[in-house]
Each structure stands twice: as C-alpha cells, then as structure tokens.
Image 1 (cartoon, rainbow, N blue to C red):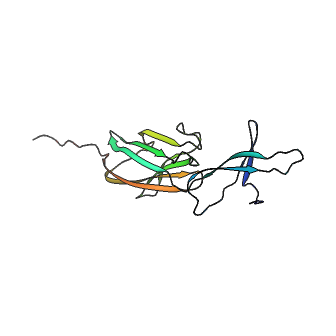
Image 2: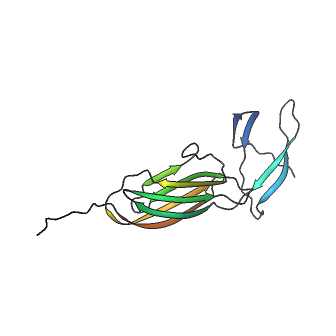
Image 3: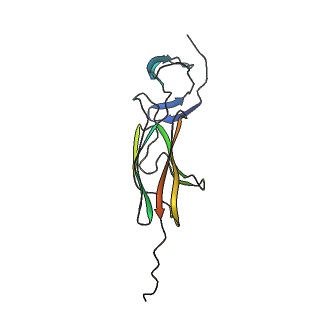
Length: 168
C-alpha cells in the first residue's frame, strides 16, 4: 500500500540529503525489508532502499568491574543485534545510590560513533571516588530507535588509606 507521511528530520550529507523516519511496527519480525520512496520533486525517480525492523534493546555484557588502586575499572561490551538493528546511540554508567552519572558515551566520545553495532569500553571510569563500601552502579544502553536496557552491578570498594598508629 501507500502511505504519505513526512520525515522526522533531514540533514545535508555527502551525496545529498539524509532523512529519518521512525515508526513503530507491531508484530513485524526483525529483519530487513525492501521498500521504495517516491519523492515529490520536479525531477524525481523512486529510490529503492531497505527498511529495518528492530524491536530489540541492545545487549550489555560486563566482563569486569573492580577497584584498581584509586579508581573503578570497567570492561563492558554493548551490542545491538541482530545485524539489521538500528545501531547504538548512547551508553551511560550511573551511581544508583546518588543517581549521579559517572560516564556518558555518545557520538564522538571515547571512540564511539553513532549507529555502531558494537562498542567496548575497557578502562577506569573518569571519576574521583572516596569512602568505602559496596558501590551500586547501573550500566545502560540505548539504540537509535529508543530501545533501552540497564544492567545493575555491585562492586566492593575501599578508597580509605590505612592509618598506622604508633608502635608500643
């Protein structure tokens, strides 16, 4: 059938315009489906491309979360599957006790590019921590269609230096 709906946004790109249209589809299996677009312009021909049905949130795999000296080390992989998925948009790490965002990875930060299907972060979180006890963190990911997932993790920490009392 036909459907006459506007694009959500358009932007200039190498080779022309890139326009985005997002629509929820119920009961459509995830896959790539052929479609064509007829542009309303003086000189136009229908363009053929592929529309992607993606109903799945990204997957988060935490390989390691531990204290290393004065920081928290995180090794995590975020994947947007299947191969027809829309791609990743943002990854965040939040302290669940304070609700403060410890890390946000978006387009152009930490080697991340928008629409990427897989991303791995393997380094210390860029925050200064103090005190001791169990830290409760949430690692979250969102794809370009807005599907979100959060994985809660806990890690024991001790950022208090030992105190040596006088010897008897």
